[in-house]
Length: 141
Image 1 (cartoon, rainbow, N blue to C red):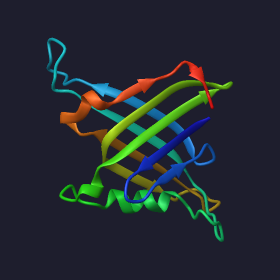
Image 2: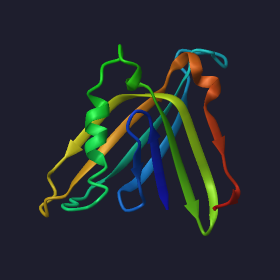
Image 3: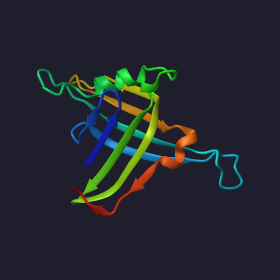
Image 4: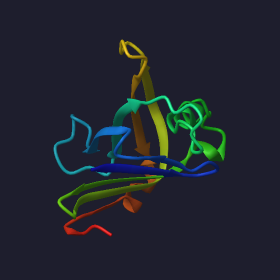
């Protein structure tokens, strides 16, 4: 099971029904010859866009579209992103990026049934990489 929450002016919850994968990366420039302070942390969330006409919660990926359109000069462009991977009642990993912003957001509606897919790439603010947390190996609540 994969879940993600994005906290900010508008909270976004992406359940296991929506999310299909999460990728976490800690990236150092390729021209580094030693461990560098010039690194960044990113999460890539991929999932399905599932119509939910008449749902009380609405379709959560609409909020991703809106967040992706916010420019960097606005405080609401930066949000708390948490992704959790749970298997057999154990949290394998929980990633938290407390100052994340959208780098890339792609939507594809080529599915013949009318459903679409999305890919969201977020990065932690570079000067706040030390606040990223990675946990795991404990019972899911």
